[in-house]
Length: 241
Image (cartoon, rainbow, N blue to C red; front, side):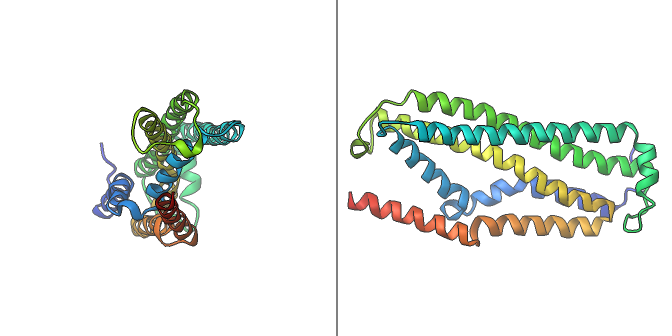
Protein backbone atom coordinates (compact mmCIF):
# COMPACT_ATOMS: atom_id res chain seq x y z
CA UNK A 1 0.00 0.00 0.00
CA UNK A 2 1.27 3.44 -0.92
CA UNK A 3 1.74 6.03 1.85
CA UNK A 4 -1.29 8.27 2.35
CA UNK A 5 0.87 11.42 2.17
CA UNK A 6 2.57 10.42 -1.08
CA UNK A 7 1.34 13.33 -3.22
CA UNK A 8 1.99 14.27 -6.83
CA UNK A 9 4.98 16.43 -5.92
CA UNK A 10 6.71 13.49 -4.26
CA UNK A 11 5.91 11.26 -7.25
CA UNK A 12 7.29 13.92 -9.60
CA UNK A 13 10.46 14.29 -7.53
CA UNK A 14 11.10 10.54 -7.44
CA UNK A 15 10.24 10.26 -11.15
CA UNK A 16 12.65 13.07 -12.04
CA UNK A 17 15.36 11.44 -9.97
CA UNK A 18 14.85 8.10 -11.71
CA UNK A 19 14.72 9.73 -15.17
CA UNK A 20 17.89 11.71 -14.51
CA UNK A 21 19.74 8.65 -13.26
CA UNK A 22 18.60 6.43 -16.15
CA UNK A 23 18.77 9.09 -18.86
CA UNK A 24 22.16 10.59 -18.07
CA UNK A 25 24.15 8.11 -20.18
CA UNK A 26 21.95 8.44 -23.32
CA UNK A 27 22.02 12.21 -22.87
CA UNK A 28 25.78 12.12 -22.59
CA UNK A 29 26.05 9.94 -25.70
CA UNK A 30 24.25 12.62 -27.69
CA UNK A 31 27.33 14.82 -27.35
CA UNK A 32 29.44 12.09 -29.02
CA UNK A 33 33.16 12.89 -29.30
CA UNK A 34 32.92 16.14 -27.37
CA UNK A 35 32.50 14.50 -23.96
CA UNK A 36 35.26 13.67 -21.53
CA UNK A 37 34.36 9.97 -21.35
CA UNK A 38 34.54 9.45 -25.12
CA UNK A 39 37.83 11.32 -25.41
CA UNK A 40 39.36 9.26 -22.63
CA UNK A 41 38.24 6.11 -24.44
CA UNK A 42 40.44 7.16 -27.34
CA UNK A 43 43.32 7.83 -24.96
CA UNK A 44 42.97 4.40 -23.31
CA UNK A 45 43.08 2.63 -26.67
CA UNK A 46 46.25 4.51 -27.55
CA UNK A 47 47.70 3.59 -24.14
CA UNK A 48 47.08 -0.10 -24.86
CA UNK A 49 48.59 0.27 -28.34
CA UNK A 50 51.75 1.87 -26.95
CA UNK A 51 52.05 -0.68 -24.15
CA UNK A 52 52.75 -3.51 -26.62
CA UNK A 53 55.98 -1.76 -27.62
CA UNK A 54 57.39 -1.34 -24.11
CA UNK A 55 60.33 -3.52 -23.12
CA UNK A 56 59.01 -3.50 -19.55
CA UNK A 57 55.25 -3.34 -18.94
CA UNK A 58 55.56 -2.74 -15.19
CA UNK A 59 54.13 0.75 -15.58
CA UNK A 60 51.02 -0.55 -17.33
CA UNK A 61 50.55 -3.31 -14.76
CA UNK A 62 50.81 -0.81 -11.89
CA UNK A 63 48.28 1.52 -13.52
CA UNK A 64 45.78 -1.30 -14.06
CA UNK A 65 46.37 -2.45 -10.49
CA UNK A 66 45.55 1.02 -9.15
CA UNK A 67 42.32 1.10 -11.16
CA UNK A 68 41.28 -2.34 -9.87
CA UNK A 69 42.09 -1.31 -6.28
CA UNK A 70 39.96 1.83 -6.60
CA UNK A 71 36.98 -0.08 -7.98
CA UNK A 72 37.28 -2.74 -5.28
CA UNK A 73 37.46 -0.06 -2.58
CA UNK A 74 34.29 1.65 -3.77
CA UNK A 75 32.51 -1.69 -4.05
CA UNK A 76 33.43 -2.61 -0.47
CA UNK A 77 32.51 0.85 0.85
CA UNK A 78 29.14 0.72 -0.91
CA UNK A 79 28.42 -2.68 0.61
CA UNK A 80 29.05 -1.21 4.07
CA UNK A 81 26.70 1.70 3.36
CA UNK A 82 24.03 -0.73 2.13
CA UNK A 83 24.39 -2.77 5.31
CA UNK A 84 23.92 0.41 7.36
CA UNK A 85 20.78 1.27 5.39
CA UNK A 86 19.40 -2.22 5.96
CA UNK A 87 19.97 -1.70 9.67
CA UNK A 88 18.19 1.64 9.47
CA UNK A 89 15.21 0.07 7.69
CA UNK A 90 15.12 -2.66 10.33
CA UNK A 91 14.68 -0.02 13.04
CA UNK A 92 12.81 2.46 10.87
CA UNK A 93 10.23 3.34 13.53
CA UNK A 94 12.75 4.68 16.03
CA UNK A 95 14.82 6.39 13.32
CA UNK A 96 11.70 8.05 11.93
CA UNK A 97 10.81 9.41 15.36
CA UNK A 98 14.25 11.01 15.68
CA UNK A 99 14.60 12.36 12.14
CA UNK A 100 11.20 14.05 11.86
CA UNK A 101 12.04 16.08 14.96
CA UNK A 102 14.84 17.85 13.11
CA UNK A 103 13.83 21.41 12.12
CA UNK A 104 14.79 21.14 8.43
CA UNK A 105 12.99 17.81 7.83
CA UNK A 106 9.56 17.81 6.21
CA UNK A 107 6.72 16.20 8.16
CA UNK A 108 5.94 12.73 6.81
CA UNK A 109 4.40 9.43 7.75
CA UNK A 110 6.43 6.40 8.70
CA UNK A 111 5.54 4.76 5.37
CA UNK A 112 6.72 7.74 3.32
CA UNK A 113 9.89 7.92 5.37
CA UNK A 114 10.58 4.26 4.63
CA UNK A 115 9.90 4.86 0.92
CA UNK A 116 12.44 7.66 0.80
CA UNK A 117 15.01 5.46 2.47
CA UNK A 118 14.20 2.75 -0.06
CA UNK A 119 14.89 5.17 -2.95
CA UNK A 120 18.37 5.88 -1.58
CA UNK A 121 18.91 2.17 -0.97
CA UNK A 122 18.01 1.29 -4.57
CA UNK A 123 20.33 3.96 -5.99
CA UNK A 124 23.25 2.69 -3.92
CA UNK A 125 22.36 -0.91 -4.73
CA UNK A 126 22.61 -0.07 -8.43
CA UNK A 127 25.98 1.55 -7.70
CA UNK A 128 27.17 -1.60 -5.97
CA UNK A 129 26.25 -3.75 -8.97
CA UNK A 130 28.00 -1.24 -11.27
CA UNK A 131 31.19 -1.47 -9.20
CA UNK A 132 31.17 -5.28 -9.17
CA UNK A 133 30.52 -5.38 -12.92
CA UNK A 134 33.36 -2.90 -13.47
CA UNK A 135 35.65 -5.19 -11.48
CA UNK A 136 34.71 -8.17 -13.66
CA UNK A 137 35.37 -6.15 -16.82
CA UNK A 138 38.75 -5.05 -15.48
CA UNK A 139 39.68 -8.70 -14.91
CA UNK A 140 38.76 -9.33 -18.55
CA UNK A 141 40.85 -6.32 -19.64
CA UNK A 142 43.87 -7.56 -17.68
CA UNK A 143 43.65 -10.93 -19.43
CA UNK A 144 43.37 -9.26 -22.83
CA UNK A 145 46.25 -6.89 -22.13
CA UNK A 146 48.42 -9.76 -20.95
CA UNK A 147 47.82 -11.63 -24.19
CA UNK A 148 48.76 -8.78 -26.53
CA UNK A 149 51.73 -9.58 -28.81
CA UNK A 150 54.86 -7.52 -28.37
CA UNK A 151 55.86 -5.08 -31.10
CA UNK A 152 57.83 -1.94 -31.75
CA UNK A 153 55.81 1.21 -30.99
CA UNK A 154 56.45 2.49 -34.51
CA UNK A 155 54.98 -0.69 -35.99
CA UNK A 156 51.50 -0.51 -34.47
CA UNK A 157 49.35 -1.08 -37.57
CA UNK A 158 46.23 0.77 -38.62
CA UNK A 159 44.49 -2.54 -39.33
CA UNK A 160 45.00 -6.26 -39.01
CA UNK A 161 44.82 -8.85 -36.23
CA UNK A 162 47.03 -6.98 -33.74
CA UNK A 163 45.11 -3.77 -34.34
CA UNK A 164 41.85 -5.59 -33.62
CA UNK A 165 43.32 -7.03 -30.40
CA UNK A 166 44.42 -3.58 -29.24
CA UNK A 167 41.02 -2.08 -30.10
CA UNK A 168 39.19 -4.87 -28.27
CA UNK A 169 41.36 -4.46 -25.16
CA UNK A 170 40.86 -0.70 -25.15
CA UNK A 171 37.11 -1.15 -25.57
CA UNK A 172 36.82 -3.59 -22.65
CA UNK A 173 38.91 -1.28 -20.46
CA UNK A 174 36.73 1.69 -21.38
CA UNK A 175 33.56 -0.30 -20.70
CA UNK A 176 34.94 -1.17 -17.27
CA UNK A 177 35.56 2.50 -16.54
CA UNK A 178 32.04 3.33 -17.75
CA UNK A 179 30.58 0.89 -15.22
CA UNK A 180 32.78 2.43 -12.53
CA UNK A 181 31.60 5.92 -13.48
CA UNK A 182 28.00 4.72 -13.36
CA UNK A 183 28.57 3.59 -9.78
CA UNK A 184 30.07 6.94 -8.83
CA UNK A 185 27.09 8.75 -10.38
CA UNK A 186 24.80 6.68 -8.17
CA UNK A 187 26.35 8.43 -5.19
CA UNK A 188 25.67 11.83 -6.74
CA UNK A 189 22.00 11.01 -7.26
CA UNK A 190 21.80 9.44 -3.79
CA UNK A 191 22.87 12.81 -2.41
CA UNK A 192 20.07 14.42 -4.43
CA UNK A 193 17.66 11.81 -3.03
CA UNK A 194 18.60 12.87 0.50
CA UNK A 195 16.82 16.16 -0.21
CA UNK A 196 13.57 14.18 -0.33
CA UNK A 197 13.60 14.34 3.45
CA UNK A 198 13.53 18.13 3.23
CA UNK A 199 10.80 18.10 0.59
CA UNK A 200 10.03 17.15 -3.02
CA UNK A 201 10.87 20.56 -4.47
CA UNK A 202 14.36 20.69 -2.86
CA UNK A 203 14.90 17.17 -4.24
CA UNK A 204 13.99 18.27 -7.77
CA UNK A 205 16.29 21.28 -7.50
CA UNK A 206 19.10 19.06 -6.22
CA UNK A 207 18.53 16.55 -9.05
CA UNK A 208 18.79 19.26 -11.70
CA UNK A 209 21.87 20.67 -9.96
CA UNK A 210 23.53 17.23 -9.98
CA UNK A 211 22.76 16.82 -13.69
CA UNK A 212 24.20 20.26 -14.44
CA UNK A 213 27.31 19.53 -12.37
CA UNK A 214 27.94 16.19 -14.10
CA UNK A 215 27.43 17.73 -17.55
CA UNK A 216 29.72 20.64 -16.70
CA UNK A 217 32.45 18.27 -15.59
CA UNK A 218 32.15 16.39 -18.88
CA UNK A 219 32.31 19.43 -21.13
CA UNK A 220 33.07 22.74 -19.44
CA UNK A 221 35.89 22.20 -16.97
CA UNK A 222 39.51 23.08 -17.55
CA UNK A 223 40.36 19.39 -17.21
CA UNK A 224 37.88 18.42 -19.94
CA UNK A 225 39.26 21.08 -22.28
CA UNK A 226 42.84 19.95 -21.62
CA UNK A 227 41.96 16.33 -22.44
CA UNK A 228 40.24 17.57 -25.61
CA UNK A 229 43.47 19.31 -26.64
CA UNK A 230 45.39 16.12 -25.86
CA UNK A 231 43.15 14.08 -28.18
CA UNK A 232 43.52 16.66 -30.95
CA UNK A 233 47.28 16.55 -30.51
CA UNK A 234 47.12 12.75 -30.83
CA UNK A 235 45.38 13.14 -34.19
CA UNK A 236 48.04 15.60 -35.41
CA UNK A 237 50.78 13.29 -34.14
CA UNK A 238 49.32 10.38 -36.11
CA UNK A 239 49.16 12.60 -39.22
CA UNK A 240 52.81 13.56 -38.77
CA UNK A 241 53.81 9.91 -38.44
